[in-house]
Length: 569
Ligand code: LMR
Ligand code: MN
Image 1 (cartoon, rainbow, N blue to C red):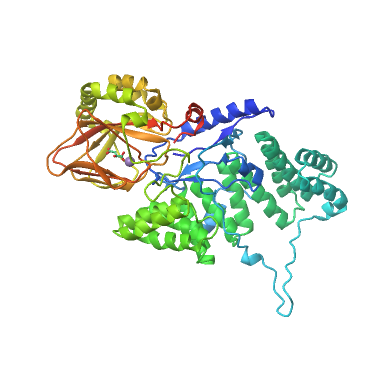
Image 2: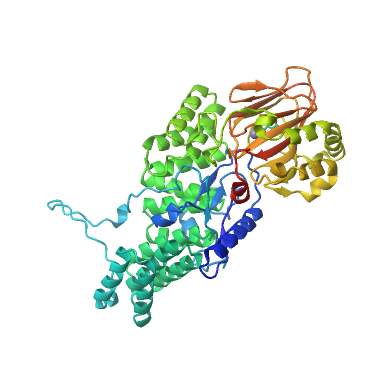
């Protein structure tokens, strides 16, 4: 459900880098199994380095799910323990040598990467002299040793101002070689490497920047403010490279230095969330809200965590107050998404609708119904599609003419080993029982499962737009009577969803699906196509099970290049 993007790059050759970026990204993504059927298992992107150039090339940062399996945290009991547990006072060992992928993505969610409150550490403020006009003393970043070479430092800074990244980097590298005890110069060497990295799109250069920041921090004469700058830059760059654990450790070191700095703590919370350590993140946000009860960033994140825990009522005021604050980092689709969802699930449907409308007005959703967050903007969006429109007439013909063998294979798996059908785990279900048996996910064939239903898999195998749909799945889906699935939204507008009816009961009130408010039902042996990035809801009110085959396909307007390069979901 999440993606981190390390790669192992040497040299600056862009072409080489690109393919390495790509492969490494896929490797890591594969290691992190996706279950994303819906945005409900929302994703977050890590904070990018502050370097605007890097942001401007639309580098996709680590994409992490905040959903399931995130509660297991290593026995943290209190906030202080979170800061200190397992941590070193100095720099963490970089646990992976792998470097990251910087993926230029077309469909980065519109929302910006999390920004945190910029409120500063109340504990660090200089005491005010009431009679005086407040003149903030600039915190010291120069050590005595740096002051000795100030004129040279200034020359290097000038190069940085002129955006001469590589020249500045070489300058500072030489300067720190002859003056190895000057933390400010070392820090600036890091900044110059960071600039060079963005100008040359070089990950190894980011690695060098991290090393320089790390060295600066470790120097005995490093002023506290410079430590703060260096650690901040280090953590951001580590996060950028997908080195999430070191990034967390660095942020923790920062939080130990500035335990009351709301901005630092807010980022620490995000770092925990990105590693799925929700309960640790929760403790951090509790602390932030103790220090600053109205901090919007902390409120939305606390609301998000509480919502994931299933406490809808409790999540609502947090998400609401947080999004209403309009503070940086609060205007993200996922917060509106979860606020609306929590409202809906607690019967406040009118308010939920208003939140979705507001989200759409603010450009966080494509529309009040189409609330996917990983979108290619130009793609046509509408709830239902004909096979012609979806460009899959031939696929539909093959599925429909083979529907009985497909059904029989599904039934044989269901009959013999019901345990193979796994329970839906994304908290989409309100009541009843809903199970799935996955054949392909994110473009990968599940060999074990395909062995049990070989005909179905061989049919899919000959459908490149389904087989290769890295933003979707192919799966059998069985729903028991009495099942209601909450209205929900898929994560991306890059796929369309085919449903082949296999066993469709007609008793009771039957089984039906609404997409964007429009009701449909299934027919045995027939394919229904809808766009699951639009809100949809399912009711199973028959007296026996309903069984379908779900086949996701690439949106017909995507180019071949996009199909190859879009990240998996
Ligand atoms: C969905 O795609 O969310 C559902 O419609 C699946 C199902 O089994 O009905
Ligand atoms: Mn769905």
